[in-house]
Image (cartoon, rainbow, N blue to C red; front, side, top):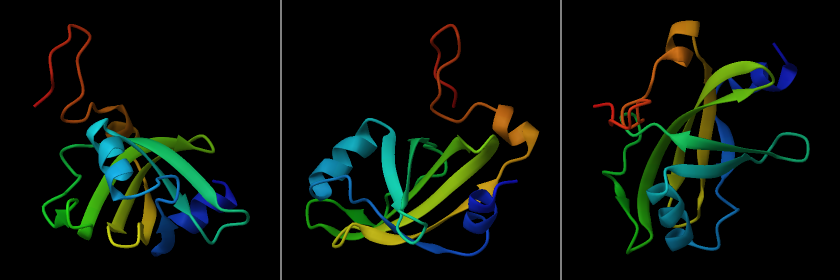
Length: 125
């Protein structure tokens, strides 16, 4: 496992949704089910893009109109040949927060996520 993956799977780390101009821009990206989040304290920063896992993402405490609350964003991706899950909690007033990676088992990495489409176009529930 790479040093980067190992480091980001140990504890929470500062993150930022700095790619976005404002909370509306972030909300539009969330509505497209794909976000870019940056670990700010890695060498040069590490920005990762991932498709949101709708069953694990929680926007219950996110008020995009008031730019307040927290968006809990979760999605899977591959980093340095490892399948990982990115868990991010973004404060909508600052577009900053904390996040970390979890290593996925082979079974988790291969399983389709809720909201994904099958080859026949059906949505997985």
